[in-house]
Image (tube, rainbow, N blue to C red):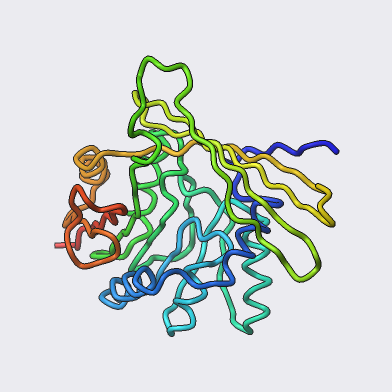
Length: 267
């Protein structure tokens, strides 16, 4: 059986999208969903979920009465989102494009993403920030969820040739007898601030592997003042942070940092 290899910069396609859709059957954690709902309700206008995937955040927010569009590079993920919309009996507005190529015929009160770091190239990340701002109404807010992979970087000896860790997720069992497993491998380049993540997805039926795919992508991390400068240099103001889906400012103990920034109001 040949193994399929996918470049994740083309999006979560094929079996990866399938696994995401299966995982999406549970909503995001309550505090995460409440955080985004609260920030969105503070602003007027439509919301754009950038890199929405199969709609894990979009559908719960729609259910709460918010008007949310989605955009993603993965056609397979968007097809699963359409499938879920049909199952729920809701209308969705979806766009198929990269974040750094954002070109949508709407202005938004809020644009948010928890996948901004999958833009592996710094220049493209800066382009994406500029394009997001062009799609915000005056005073509109950008919310970007970032993290630093400390669990991978801690304890690394820079003289070691191999800066990698490996682990396996719990198997996913579905109703038709398939068992899906995910094997992870992650390595880092501390100087470039990038993490190379490889994920191998295997599907078993009766303990026999019938399908296997490997997906690889770069994730770039940013330190706090570095990212603040990126936001300032792309025209945002009122830059703030939130730690771990709370109203509290992020600090050194925050596992997740959400950056909030505004498209300046017209004076």
